[in-house]
Image (cartoon, rainbow, N blue to C red):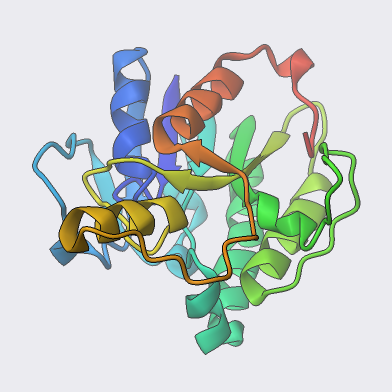
Length: 231
């Protein structure tokens, strides 16, 4: 399958792309490559790529693809809080526009990297995909808005699927040290102690970056009849 992966040079993308290639998919990347100076190690698999800001994507960039895997975003809460408007412009408006252009270009599958932060402060209850969404931060709000807007595009020709990832961890060629478990491990390795930035009582779901990538690969490989928008 010919697949366009946005954010292919990011934390998840540099792990996901090799899995897609090994599975036999024809991958093209789209990335502004803002973090080109932050490569942690060698090993980023090279694929044909479009170096472009997400806001500048045109229909012609999406023609000929069977699927779009949309990872690209401003990707944490502090960054979103710094300038909420830019977060909404990129994470929300540009993402919805990407899906609309993809549908017009004849793309049949649109896989969106959403977030479990969409649930907000959920208390002690275990939640599934039917739980109420209570986003708090601009980052989380942008994710919910994309789901709501892109879900309306679903029809017999266009299948959007949303994966609400937990907080990622694990090694990547474009490693992020701001992620909670990566940060704890980094402190332990470099300083000889674990630095906890709270009273120790909070908890959050986490998932390995390779498992996130495998989940996207599984959804991409599933028959379209088994896909449900918003699941």
